Image 1 (spheres, helix red, strand yellow):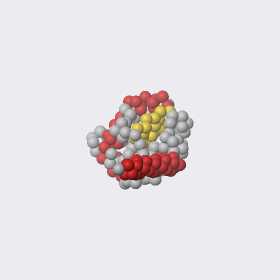
Image 2 (tube, rainbow, N blue to C red):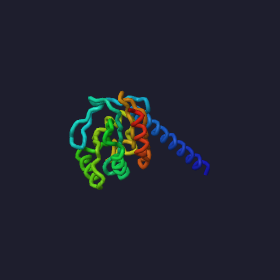
Image 3 (cartoon, helix red, strand yellow):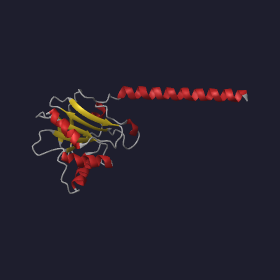
Image 4 (tube, rainbow, N blue to C red):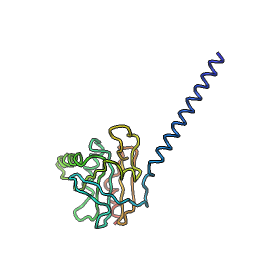
Length: 196
């Protein structure tokens, strides 16, 4: 009886030690490739991404303007679709800021999504959907949601909204691990006005 109890304790201790070692190895490998999550005061790196028509979008553009970058999970996510539809209300006709929504979706998937949203009777998006299929920008900003690695959704970003000023510096952001939580359009609008 004593021997079996001792053996059970040793086996449990070994299992715990092995699990801890695996967790440390996973953290070390994730830490070596993952960037820190972007924060206020960070500069956005220059990038070139294709939009829903296949046209290239360069950041920063020739005319430096405040920019809103919205990172969304994909066209399959109902929370993302709702957010993108609501973002149509963010811009007014005389506004001088850029708005881009970015996902790992291909340009063709983004085009289909833009048509689907416009089909709700409230008009077209009025902003461009950018494709980051290799999630290079997503990774560079530390927004890669590793919980989906190894699945068909590998590379998707956390739900994030960034306001960037004319110097390319983040002045405000909301990043959420809970994909259901998105900032209100009015809150984003107030921060864009401060960035002008």
